[in-house]
Image (cartoon, rainbow, N blue to C red; front, top):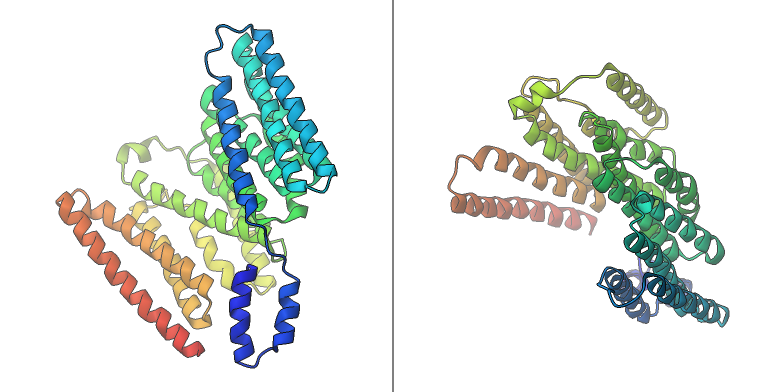
Length: 397
C-alpha cells in the first residue's frame, strides 16, 4: 500500500475509532513519499537508451570504424564519470541514471564492434559480458534499477540466442541463475522479482524449442518456479513465483486446448516415460508438502499442472480443469471474503469462458454475431460478479 492510499484508509480507521489521529500520523511518518520527478528521469534514461541503440545501427559510411568505436567509448566514460560524481555528491538519482546510461553505452559499444567488424560468433557472448558488467555495477552501487537493467539484458540475450541461432546459451542461463538470482532473492523487490520469474519462463520456452522437446515438457519447466514458491516465506518474491507460474501454465492451457483438437498434432506427439516420472515425483511430493504444512487451500493450483494430452477428448479435459480452478477460487474467495482470491477466480473464469466460446462458436457463427454474443456474455458475467462483490462488501459492513 502506498502512502496516499494508506492515508485515505487511515482516516476511515480514525473515524471508526480503530486508531487515533496521533497514531495515524506516527504510521504515516514511517512511509516516505516518493518524489514524482523520478518518473521524468526514468523516461529520460529510456528514451536516450533507445536512441543510442538506434544510432549505433545507422549508416556511418563517412566515419572510420575505429573512430565510431572511440566516439561511443568517450561518451560512455563521460557518462560513468558524471554518474560517479553525482552519486558521491548525494544526488543518487541522477548518479544512478548516468551510470545506467553509461552501462547502455557500454553495450552499444559491443554492438557496434560486432556490427562493424562482423564478429558474428561473438554476438551472444556480448550479452554475457554485458550482463556480467551489470552485475558488477549492482554489486558496487546496490540500486534496484541497475539490477533490473542487467537482468533484462541477460533475458534479451537468451531470446536473441534462441531466435538467431536456435540455441539455448547455457552460460547466459548460468549468469541468470547463479549471478542474478542471489541478489534478487535477498533484495526481494517487486520489480526485480517479477522480472526474474518472467525471464525464467521465457528462457524455458527457448530451452524447449532449441532442444526440440515435446511441448508438454513446459508443464515441468513452468512448474519449477511454483515449486520454489512453496518453500519461501510470504513476500514479494514468493508472490511473483506463484502468480507468474499460474499465469504461465494458464496461458499454456489455453494454447494446449486448441492444439489438442488437431489430429495431426496428436499423431506426431511422442510420449516420454521420463517426463511422467519427473512430473509424478515433483507433483506428489508437493501435495505431501502442502498437506503436512496445512496449506491444503493451495492444492487446487496443482490441477493446472496435470498433463492431460494422452486422454481421449483431452482438449475438453483441459477446459474442465481451467473451469474447476476458476470456480474453486471464486468459491473460496467469497467464503473467506478475500478480494485477491475473487480476482484470480473471476479472471480465470472469464478467460476460460471465452476460450471455450472461441473454440466452439468461431467456426459455427457469423463473425459479427460472434462478437455481439461475446459482449452480451461479458455483461452477464460481470453483472453476476458485481452482485457477488456487493454481497461480500455488505457482509463485511
